Length: 252
Image (tube, rainbow, N blue to C red):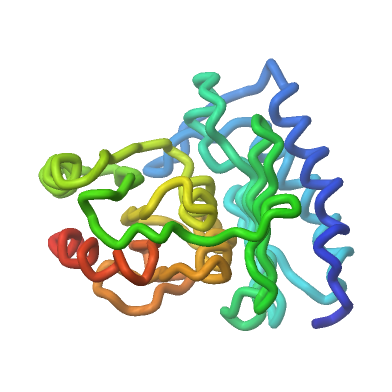
């Protein structure tokens, strides 16, 4: 790494940005073609994070959802406001998501919920955490006992029937509109699985590491290990993975 990185260096700044998010009452909103809504606050937060993160790890680069960037040996992946549509409507289900990768391999992931003031984080080989609590994915091994989460792409028709079937076969399917928090909730065992198609790298960069460091599996819907550009994802425990993978096969 270009310089030793202590994850505690990030906590205060991320919490500060989260506080700015929930305290902001007036902001402009517009539509991004094919990509939902974006607010002035999305841009403001990304522009605040960029110099801070690049200084925190000298020599690193940053890829942000709103203004892009460049990839280097060490690259930050940043979604300054995951769940923008929720935020616009006042539903408190949004998060800040950031991750540091080296040549495609995750070394740090962090998801901050400013409403509950929870910060989920993981470092490669050091486990996943929320405060002092080490995270562990659910021990659920049967679909009939599982609580599931998903998100919908712009054209969700193919997913409706699968969701209907899984709703009957499980404890239920939830749709929160915030993939970063869904992945964090898989990591801490609050939900047993999450899947979605057509996700971007900044949506999942932190969550992939959170789930894996908590003992879970993250694959694409074809069953292969997922990376930043896989596009579609299934995150769950190793025990539950085969049954869900079979159920989601039509979406692969």
